[in-house]
Image (cartoon, rainbow, N blue to C red; front, side, top):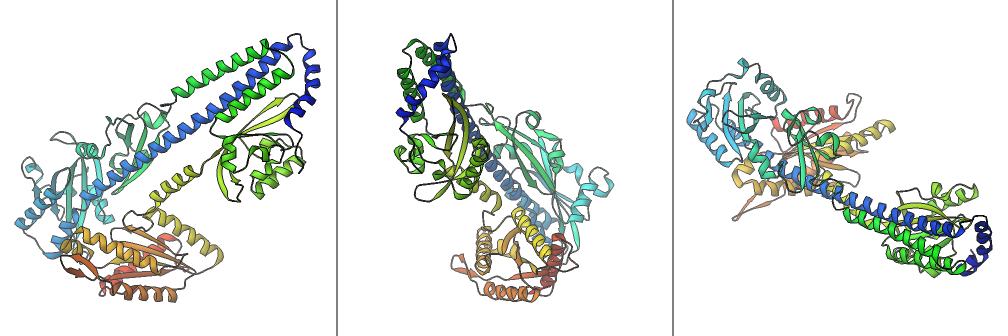
Length: 596
């Protein structure tokens, strides 16, 4: 495409038309000054509005990151106490009918290892027989849960679900607030034994995590008493935070339910933007002064040259790329930030088509818009739109584009502010990864795995393709933790996960459902093929040897439950139930095998 005429020549050519226009107005000098004021003030307002948006996004990203850290610490504190139930499981499994001395020793041990534990008790057959410490808790001894209309429904729900239920916070008679964790204990043969109850000091737990109303950086509120999530009552912080402050919301899974945490900056979402407003006011004032100076100074070409010089100074001081184009898509201005961003010199770009900065798809849309006489910004770059730009070396990178339009003489011009958001996109991807990956094993976490599994199941049903589901559980994992310690148990889980990942295809999805239980979804896999995969995994894992420290080593095995997509499996829940039943069958028939 031929280069446009030099800018000085274009200004000279347009001057007669501009003079003719201005002669129709008695206050033409004031009009010229007003035009300059509006142009510079609009550009300044546009730039500082963009900066405010950037600061707001940065602040929200910071609050989201801090909220993620708080929720992770909260989960760690809760899990550390809930896992105390494993000690009681071990006692019941080892001793068929433990006596009071054995139970009291176990309770004392659980109490000493717990964090923020007020008391711990057991109710074999749903009657509280033992509690530690006894002092201050004598009245609950002999308490029979089925006799309590208030407490029995929650206990019954925990038994039916075979899972821990966390209730509260509630006000404790001893003072302060508490969380009550009730865990049903089952013998190894599956028979129900009783309830393990832990009362946690909620105030101490929240303070240890940093979830307090006195947090110096964040406003914090939590709702969902008794695990009722977003529908529950607010039990910490100001309830108005959920309604009026545009908070960052984060759902936290607790045993038997969820909590909803709302956070916002302590000083509000406009914190740190006072200097932007000050600069914007100064810029508007400066624009007024420049307009007045233009009105007072000489007319004609000198005035236009001064305006061009001032505009150039403004464009070169902003750190965002500024590209000014006309109605034909030809570039008139290309500032230094744009040069650094795209790799072109301004002298190479002025007078050429803006298509050079676009990908092929975007350029095609732009050309179509020009042919149909559409507004460029409506077809090319909408305000605040994200797009993919092209560098001189052919590489592509994400940008955020904001566009304003103005007139120079009788021509409509479009001013585009372009910001490289590569780092922001990388940060967003990192946040997404943190929300999807299990930090210990590198597998997908339960939520991310279930989403992927639902998508695979939908595609398999739509296209009539085979699909297999595999549940994998480490055998005797509690014994590994009890014998070698939880740090060795973690090594076993990491080694197990890496072995499964190494054996997977690129299209398979692998996730950790909880504890030592993992799952794999195998698209395009028949039941016979899934059996081959299971047998190969069993053999590989059986041969692994783990260094347990102090010259000790251990081997471990897994049990695998298989399920395949059939007419009997209406959805993911059905597949999981089939695989879970097969897993228990494999456990019950000797472990270190597959079933299904």
